[in-house]
Length: 255
Ligand code: ADE
Image (cartoon, rainbow, N blue to C red; front, side, top):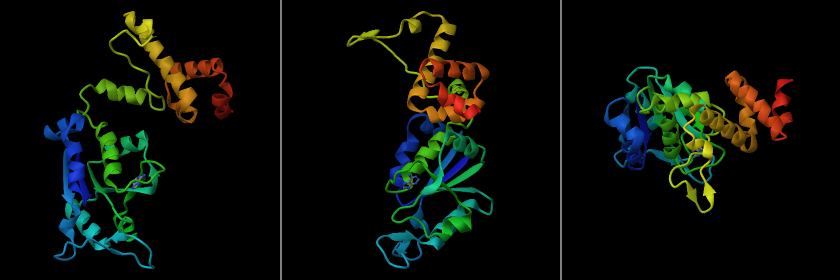
């Protein structure tokens, strides 16, 4: 997969792509990620990329000819999915990450100021995506959040594919808690079952902990994804909802 990131602040984006799992994937060529300074497509020798907004008001908008020229040059005539981080976009979820991971190429358009001239998204048929109901100062952090989640879905990026399979098996479930040494700390002990060596008991314990956390903290996640979970997990979810006095919660959606 090839990803291009267009930004006025390449120096804010590049360090994140150089470390950890993504850093390895980029260095080994599994994914081709290129960061470009939007100013390369400035309309004059002063490096102008933005202007005041029509109708008045504070802030500047990035010029449509700048953003469109940049994307068209990078796309080189191919139809490429343009992701435009924007709090007005569709909400980013693991499902959206999986969908974007099927694309051969992605171009991220990171805005600053008041964002892009509205015609940019229209002309480029951009996929406007929000990482949540809050506002950050530019598209760089959202682009990195989206890119990270998408690249984890690309084969070979995450060393142990089991952890990605696990992500999908448990889509809609919060992660179970993990422990490491020491066994006792400040009066809190590691649960005995994790030291038992009984893999089946450990698997069941972890599944129950995932379900318990999700039922208590994010019941709407479980409601939404329950039909997609394996039958064993569905049965256990209903059983635990009952135990926790939350049976109405899962029963409601099932008529
Ligand atoms: N730009 C500013 N805030 C954003 C958000 N929450 N999601 C995507 N892009 C953004």
